[in-house]
Image (cartoon, rainbow, N blue to C red; front, side, top):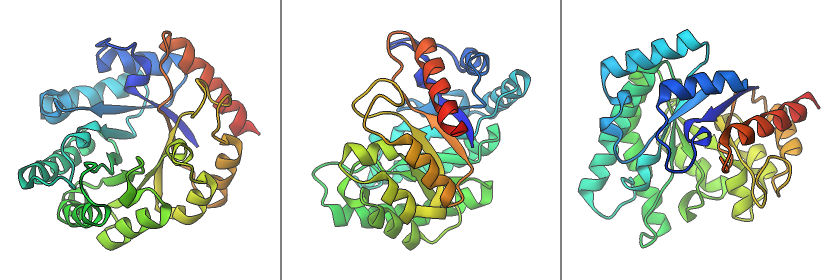
Length: 265
């Protein structure tokens, strides 16, 4: 498996370190890839401009590090499950833009959190996400990228069976799962069962802890999870979404060392 890191994990809270600098830092620390995250201002970032994507792709190549995925934090505001139709339409436009952005920087996968306003009933939220992703999937198929839906604790898609229902009803090879075992633990689900059930639907994996700052000192059974992933044939990316702490460089290095030891057995 390859190990990467989400850009924000290398920033101190409130810090605005540019992607160019973070590519350099990720490589210096020993990571093989960096996941780029965009928030509500997604359209203002380099990812949403052709020349910006070219610059990021060239920077990654020069530094010698991959951009395996992009993370669309924007869906915490623009959810396919929202009551407002205009917001759902915006979610669709973001998906199309993300497909172009990912392809432009050479990323294969796009993290899309399965968000839902708390006032929306689970079954309604599920239906809206299925409808939204069915409409969005052709853009990903055309771009040669995959929308990877992440379990973020919302009731319509928290249990593995519910996530499977969403992905399978969309029915596109460009829609899969971005599995976060720590999110499963946080909601009192068994992450090993999640891996066993989701199996080859898993295209990307987030890594962090619950009840601890560093990998191995919390409640997430990472050794067992890695073994379970290998058992179902997963050999993709492990992307750190770990706690940046007050010293992001030290924390990232410590977590990377811990994960390497786990992978070495």
